[in-house]
Length: 422
Ligand code: PGA
Ligand code: ZN
Image (cartoon, rainbow, N blue to C red; front, side, top):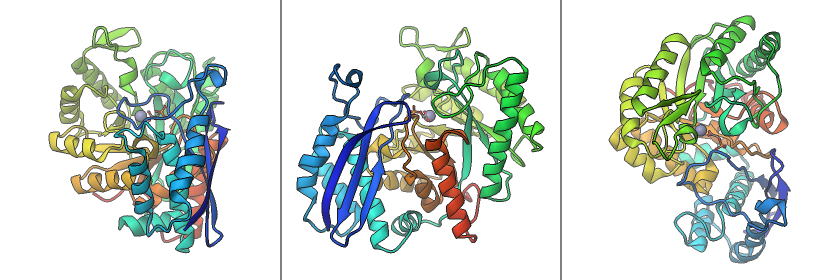
C-alpha cells in the first residue's frame, strides 16, 4: 500500500528542470526516482510536460507535472493497495486518459512508475534487477556497455552531424573488464585528440566534442585509440557502434539528409554507411535513417542487416505496437529501449517482450538529460537484453549507471556477460 507520494522539481545534467519522486509504503519502505529527458526526441514519444512559463527556466519548468504527482496522482494512488507494479502502471495510464500521456505528463508518470518498481522490489526482498527478471520471466545477464565517447548532433556544439560514436567491448571477458576497456580507450582518445590539435571539451553525454565535421575522421581516431590502449578493434575486442540520429539532419524542405556539406537521398546515405562498415569495425547503427522514412528503413535493413545491427530508436519510441508493426515489415532488426519514451515500466517490459518474441535484440538507453538515478542498469540486467548505453565513462550521471553494473556484477559473480544469445 502506498502511503505517500511526493515530487519536487530538481535539475537534470543539462541544467534543465526535471522531477524527483519519493514514494513511501505502509511497510515503511521509502524509495526515490529521477526522471530523464531527451534532446533528439522522436515525435511519437509520450509527452513530457513543460510549464511553458517564460519567466521560469525559459519555459522549461516542470511545476505542472510536479503538481500532478503531488495532487491528482497522489490522491488516486495513496491509501490503496496494489497487487503489482502492472496495477500501479495501469492506474496511472487510466488516470491520465490520453494516448500520449499528455494530460498528466509522461515525466510525472515515469517518476511514479520507476519509484513503484523500486518499492515493489524492496518489498519482495529483491534487488531491482532480480525483481524485473522475476516479473518479466527473463534470464538476467550483464549487458555490453556502449560508451558514447564522441558527441555530435543535438548533443554538442560542433559541426559533427552524427550524434553518437560508441565503444562496445564485445570481446571483454566480463563486465568489469568491459568498463576498464571503455575508460582506457577514452583516455587514449583524449590524448590522440589533443595530439592532433583538437579540443577535448565534453558534450552532453560526456563524450569529446571536437570541432570536426567528418565521421570518418572520428572513426579513424577511435580505431587508433582502441589500438593505443592495447585492444583489438572489432568484435573480438572493442567494436564501434553509431547513433547518427538521422531524423535530426534530414531536412523537411528537400527530404534529404544533410551530412558534412552533402545532401543525400536515403539510398546514398545507405551507400555512405556501407563504405563506413567496409572501412571501420562498426557493429551496430542506430537511427541510420529518419523516423518517418519507413521505406528507406526497409532497404537499410536489407542492405546492412546482414553485416551490422540495424537499431531503431526515434522510429520505434519503445512502443510495443509500433515495434510489432516494424517486425512485420522487417524494419530494423533491433530496438533501443527508453522508459520515458513510453511512460511506464510495465509498458517498457511489454515492448521488450514484443522484441524478444520477434527476435529483435534490445539496448536499454539513458537520455541525454539525466539524473543520478540508476534504474536503467537494473532494467538492462533484469531483462537480460545484453546491451546498455549510458554515455561516456565520464560525468557522474553517466558513470552512475556503469558503476551500478559493476556492483551488480561483483555481488553476483554467476551472472553472464555479453550480448543475449539469439
Ligand atoms: P536523446 O538522445 O536522449 O537526446 O533523445 C539519445 C538517443 O538518441 O539515443
Ligand atoms: Zn538514438
